[in-house]
Image (cartoon, rainbow, N blue to C red; front, side, top):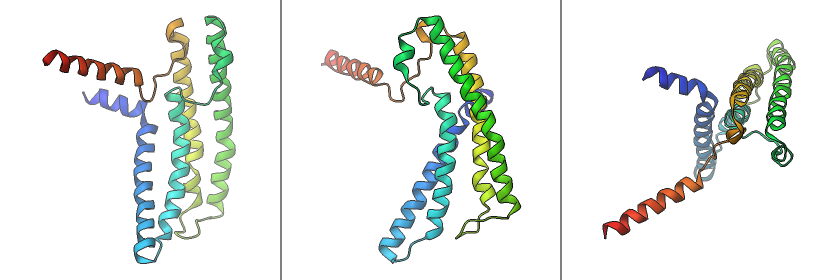
Length: 189
């Protein structure tokens, strides 16, 4: 059972990390608002940390979007193509995104290295900017890994499931569940 949990965690790492960051960020901003409103003194460091966490959450979200097939794309043209061409176009799209993700890692590492060399720090907490920005190359590397996984998955899919993403909230499944519960209540009366 531990292997299943570990595999699920590793396959959805960015989603879990993004959720944890979001919760912490929300708590910090709540504390800042409460202290400003009730005590007349803002906790300024909370805003600085929240800003850094927001950036981290956004970059982790890029990799998570690939994982869930929620990244930005225009489906209207792709959906009109025959299966073979649709599959080729989806794979080509992933390969182009993969090349970009791998390419952008190096300029981002340069930014991180420049901040580290200058010992640049945030204005309030003096938090190293290199640490704040290191998420960018890490997230693009993670995105590249997810794109490879997604491309492999796409190459194995058949026509009916090609490129289909599971909805974030499956309304049809919820409606079916509600109808089944209503039918069960009706049958019990």
